[in-house]
Amino acid sequence: MPKLICIIDMDKEKGLTLTTEDKDGKILQTVKMDGESITLEVKGDSATSTIVQKQDSVTVTCKSFVLKAETIEVTSTKASSWKSDDTFALESAKAFTVTTKDELTQTATKDATLSSDKAVTMKAAKLFSVEGADVQLEAKSGVLSLNAPSVKAEGKKDIAMEGPQVKVTAKAQLALKADGMAEIKGGMVNVG
Image 1: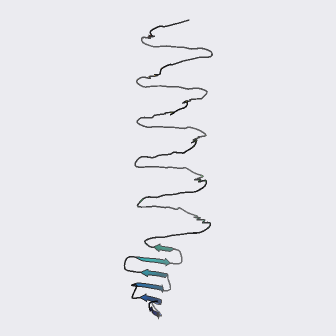
Image 2: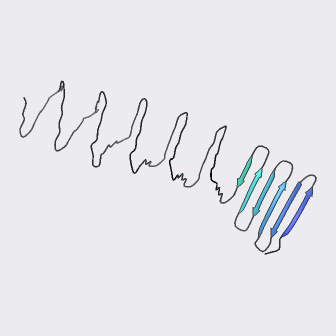
């Protein structure tokens, strides 16, 4: 066990300073109380960690911050922010819930991916809007279904439907109309 150098410095203007130095390990530990704040600092060759406590704030500055507990609860009465200048990961072994009583906005400068090993459900009580330069809907092995009281497909240029078999069935009335030429073509055409 290395010998430590311990110093207690009391000053009526500067306050109280406690210093512990390990010269062999090149580590300096300092506690300062100056009447306005309490500062805890551990300084070594490669890094320095600091905790500064004032009457209205606590600031932790360090290279690595680890918090472990059985349960953790964080509450803020005003605005909160969480920022990383590198990658950011949130992970849960069980259910994960994000809830807001106001608007929810998710934005990505690059690609965004939402995936699930099982089902994905998206619901809107009112308007549900999907927009993109190109939009693709694909069912890998099952059926792609559109179900609504009324379904409208509109193309500003054209609409193309293609498949080995194309069926259009109306249970009541079927109306086909073209303001220009109407063409029905096939190897065999059966009307009736």
